[in-house]
Image (cartoon, rainbow, N blue to C red; front, side):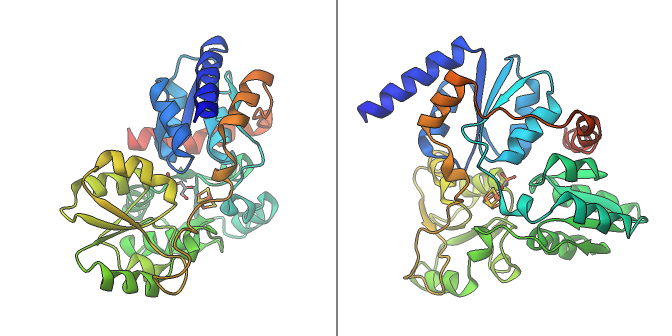
Length: 319
Ligand code: 13P
Ligand code: SF4
């Protein structure tokens, strides 16, 4: 703990000295979330991280999360310096949607509106009509369905299937998945429900359909935290990255949070749900990023304007 306090004091001093603000995702280490709160930064879902970062007066944003979050910050605020604890922190959805293949896919279906999840590279965003995050995906696609549009959806097939089921829209789907959420199993949750029959089930829609089917609440990280607060149940089974427990416990301190198992039974693999890339964010590499200005995000000049349009459309739509 003495080390932790030293790191925290150093980061607080560096944030001031470098005119920087810490923007953290709910899946990062609790110590990072705590620091963001203590320094006037933000802890948020990917939509609110984007909005918050673009509205800050500081000249540097330290984005604790994964690479697409840093790129989104850069696209929305190209004049700012965007640092990350490590540029190695990526996302299986981003990796699974290479720009060249995606462009060819879109070119083959020119009469489709292109909707991409925020968990993609700047180049993929630049090819899109809309960017969405999980907290706004349903509303945007409902809006497009009302206009009679057909859409290309990429890259998360589980979130896509959920949105398609809710809206009935004609959708061409990319075959991508989140390696963390894809591991949740309906059987494991049903086993847990036998142990905690009064528990409600909270599910992020990157999870497979059979898991979403068991949910009392489905939503983005911020929507699940809200549900944890609002639902009357005292026990909550949570199918998303366990980093979220820090905020859930703050939101509903009297409740009990249970990790949804990622194995086949409630007794196995009780704490596997943690994104390996989110876990790369630490107090030590935050210090290094701020001290040395390393792990800075750059986005190709030629992509910035094109990638900003679908992102800004999302922010305007959700305002
Ligand atoms: P949220 O937009 O719900 O924060 O999700 C981001 C993410 O990467 C979930 O795995
Ligand atoms: Fe990507 Fe999944 Fe990690 Fe979120 S939890 S950043 S979707 S790999």
